[in-house]
Image 1: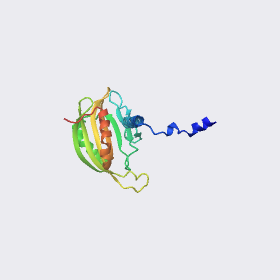
Image 2 (image 1 turned 60 degrees about the vertical axis):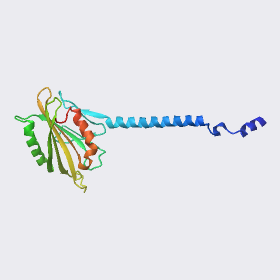
Image 3 (image 1 turned 90 degrees about the vertical axis):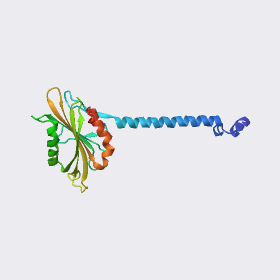
Length: 215
């Protein structure tokens, strides 16, 4: 009994302060664990941010890659639409795709005039800002139109939200899908105040189609 009591009176080894070498070892292990957690979180975030989904344009045309966090949304008159549900604005950042047969006599030169004219009739307070030449997936010319307009995204729901100034770009190029020449029109748009935040995503959309900047 006395030996047992003596054992109880002795300080527990777990309560003894660690030596300098033990403290250094513990700090090192803790640092390794923290660094591992940071790199793991960074890797998970990057995988999430960089993950993409693809939408095939058909035939020999390249697929359009868009952020995996974006949601597909039905829209009349377009082949495909995806929106960014994380947009802070009432106007969700988006990409839209139209593919149609090239009309007789239609070229990028003629589209540089006719396309903005059509947009004037479709979009409120449309203002064309610039028209730049790029290169399509097969090295052929492409046209990049940058513009702005006024949207009222809350009108359909009956809300009284303010109208939004939207900045958009229409990328136009003509490509053969293995059957015929098609006009491919890719539209990206966002609240003008959020454009910079979505610039990388929009650039990635164009790059997935093999689009390169003008020379």
